[in-house]
Length: 62
Image (cartoon, rainbow, N blue to C red):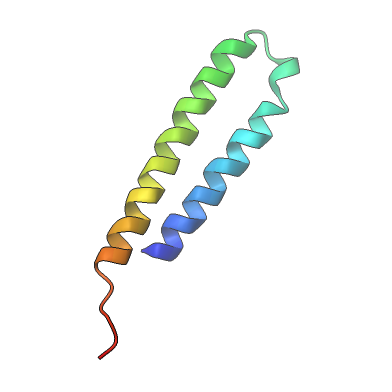
């Protein structure tokens, strides 16, 4: 669960950075970045929750 959360966090960051480079060709750059920010923020938040739950559920070595 921790690994999947980490991968999702990286994907969200890469998606945001890739879409930021596409704003000069957009008809409405503000609306594009608002949507991209919402999507990447949601995916990033879910990934952080997955990482936290994965750390909570981890058993300590005996």
